[in-house]
Image (cartoon, rainbow, N blue to C red; front, top):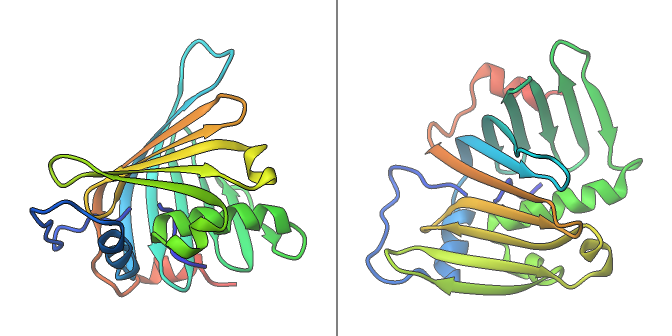
Length: 203
């Protein structure tokens, strides 16, 4: 799986240039990240609810292995996503595995989100109309509008913002519901996984 969750990787060792960021620079920077660790804060705005739903946790992206999305608050749940499986663990319950063979459409969505966070323009253009804009203070904004019917039924658009890499993501569903995710404490080192991190991807 192309390293996700994308959508994203602003390491302390990366130098941000003074000139406006271009899409090729962003794509190059994202493709050069082998391991990313980050904290995230997510807010869901759902029609009919008086207050948004907040959650937080950690993110681990490993090139050529997959993504580990670990929610810590308000309850513990972990998702491990690879090219071939999605593993779900809720609290202390046994891990549940979903295979690509049985959940092809779900993996399609996982794949396109992976492309977002990899800055994979060629893959994104198969699914979205891309509007990339350079902003002030070396920041940029990318708006993705789906051009495939199946995607349009789920999402009306995705907005990403950052400097050289993705820091904020807003997903607008066809229903009007919104998800806003902010990533911080991003680190691209060490590139060697710990024993516990390797275990996430063990079969």
